[in-house]
Image (cartoon, rainbow, N blue to C red; front, side, top):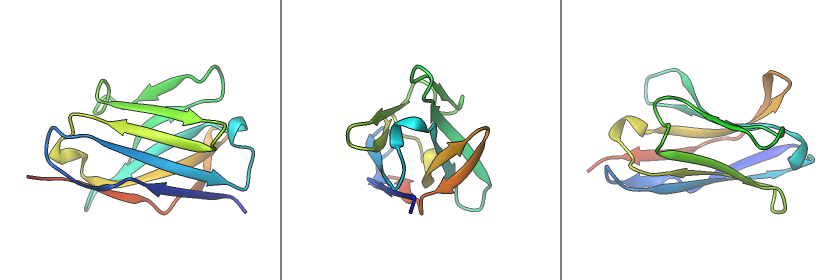
Length: 117
C-alpha cells in the first residue's frame, strides 16, 4: 500500500523557518517524481515545488522561489521542504504528492503550517 505521511508543520512567526518531511512507503521511492502542493484556508490548491527523478531537477512556484528548497533522501524514502523567510501568505495545509506521468496518483493527508505573529 502506497503511503505518504507529512510531518513538521506548526506555528511560526513571519520570517521564521520550518522543515517539512514526507515519509514514503509501499513503492520504490527513487523511481517517482514528487511534489509539494498547498491549500490556504478558503482557497484552492497551489503547486509549490517538484523534484523529478530525471537528474533530480527541481522547480518552484514563483511565490516561493528563493525561499523554499525541496530535496529527497532516497536511502530514507523521505522528501523534504525547507521553508525560510516564511510569510503569512504561506499559511496552508501542505501535501506531499506522487507523480505518475504528468498526473498525480497519491496524496498524503497534509500538515498544517501557520505563519503568524
